[in-house]
Length: 103
Image 1 (tube, rainbow, N blue to C red):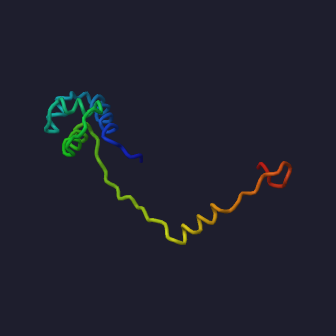
Image 2: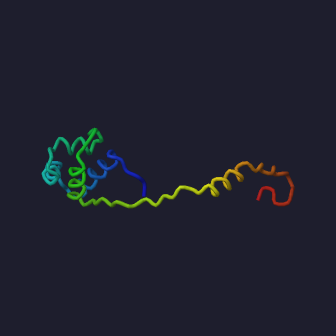
């Protein structure tokens, strides 16, 4: 799943709010903020929005937030060296008519 920024989240909130036929005022009330802040969030013009407001607005329109632990393991020294050796190996030129060329 792609990473979403606040602009993309705001667009999703607007889309789902409209699908559910909710007003910005209804979402704002559920989120404990002003209608103006929801408008700015949906338009991508809010420089910062409290996390609790974003989460409450998402929940009101039927969206949820999932936190997934990103499993990243840095490469080992051996893996880096092996990759460097592969990168330094000159590629063979394809010769017209040579066996295996242009397959």
